[in-house]
Image (cartoon, rainbow, N blue to C red):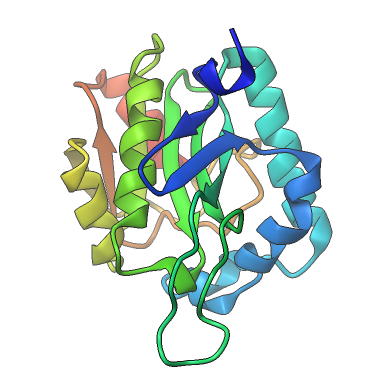
Amino acid sequence: MTETDAPEYLTTARLRLAPLAPADVAEVHAIYADPATWLHLPAGRHTTLAQTERVVDESEQSWAASGLGRWAIRLRHDLPGTDLPGTALPAGTLIGVASAMLMDCGARNFGYRLTPASWGIGLATEAATVALAVAQASAYPVTARVLAANPASVRVLERIGLTRVWRGRGAPGTTPADAPALPDTTALERLIFADRPLTPELLAAIIRLG
């Protein structure tokens, strides 16, 4: 099997997905440090390179332990820009990250984050569709958490076939101590999507994650 035949290396009409690697850190940090990618959760923006390095480290650990982790999303072809300078993106540009990380609760955490220059032309849906197909081939439930104030992400999750299984707010401070070092969003209105019914215990554990 060649590298490009392996299931972790994915292609679509416009994109190429490969496991996130240390060589991607600088490009990923540029996206995760961009305030525009955190409009709905400003406190999540990366302010140090170490935060982004942790994202890559966690991904490599997940790939080794469960066969899936995070993918770097790159363009297969040049992406024409708008009339504004600097908006065109050449082939090979890393435009975002897709994720199917295995969580301690026994479910996969599905998600994505793309640079604003690539928004509005269906690339998030394109990347999420192919990544979800691979994630669903594993034995673990696939879940996604999204803030209710982020309707664009909600639409993508609905479009790729995930089902909303919960909507609400939790109690502040209930996020487990060993959860990833992200802002506590338990008190914000959130939605949880899944690719199958979840047990009450598993759903409760995911709600606690924020």
